[in-house]
Length: 151
Image (cartoon, rainbow, N blue to C red; front, side):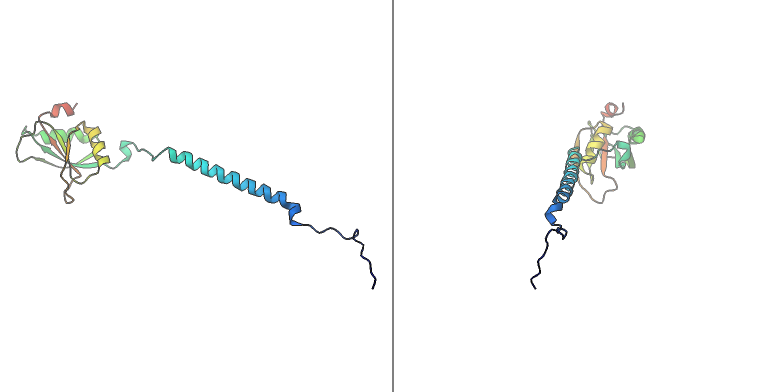
């Protein structure tokens, strides 16, 4: 019963801390990868939303109205708009030909589309008369200054 154990002949037990360098290396790799992802997404977020070219955006629906009484002015102006990203859905005349200045009437469009339409037509004057049942997003009332905008 008096057995003695020889501690030098048994192999030593492997402790978890003897392989700690593997865990430290894995943790360092994870931190580096996460840091890279955060920095790369942060750089992309600073770029802001992607800006599309005008030909990539949907056409703006407009009704062209003759506001000054000149014969066939609405159809001439709609022909001028043919090469722009504008869809002319109707032509007509205003009840009274009293418009000296051309104007855009916002019916159900938004301000980004208004800015696009102003850029395409050159008409900066605008007003709002919202009507969700109108067939076009905007009305363009062509006034006596039409030649200024058909260059």
